[in-house]
Length: 260
Ligand SMILES: [Zn+2]
Ligand SMILES: [Zn+2]
Image (cartoon, rainbow, N blue to C red; front, side, top):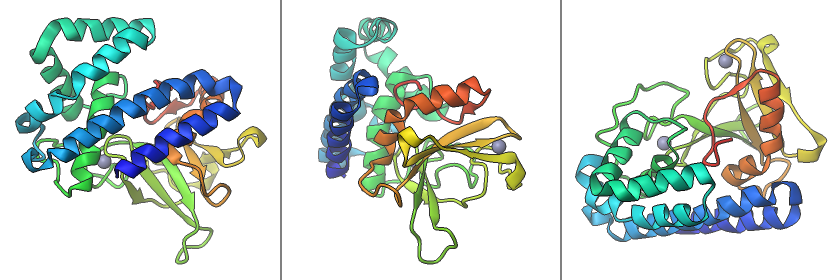
């Protein structure tokens, strides 16, 4: 899984080099991914201490946080840098409550919690340690491992399905689970007339999957068009499609780490 983090970092730098318009975004994401990779590596190295209950794992997880806070305080956008400084001033108790809140009542607007918990939950997934104290509702459209919302949908060739398979990628633990192609990942709408798939020639392997019933969307990364894509990173690189969807009144199911 450490390799998966490195693959994400490499893909962010590849896409940053290629596309000037989204370069600042991908450079920022690349720096974050390095912090997340190192957080993952340090958690994985101490995985014998992890239980899957964040409350019990706090001492181990918290150790990752100061470096992330310091880095964002130094290089992040003003609003996040200020939040980072406040959390540094708040000490361990501010960090612990941020982590526990992000774990139990997740919000895609809690940047620091989401950044750290992706590494933590991904480490639990690698080590097969099921989250114990994350009692989120279970449903087909949330991650079967941790209960997280989907960040991005992935289209791929699948021998056993007509028209190929689809998976959703969890915004928290970054694992995937199978999901029907013609189905809204937010409200479960399956009437094709309510489901729109929008594609721009500028992003051949990306599309916006929007639902007119609940007015939500997420992006799909089509691996049958570009097998080397790294879905969570290519999703960020397709930021102009988020603007496009938002202008048309659709709300994203789950904002990505960059807040888009
Ligand atoms: Zn998950
Ligand atoms: Zn819907």
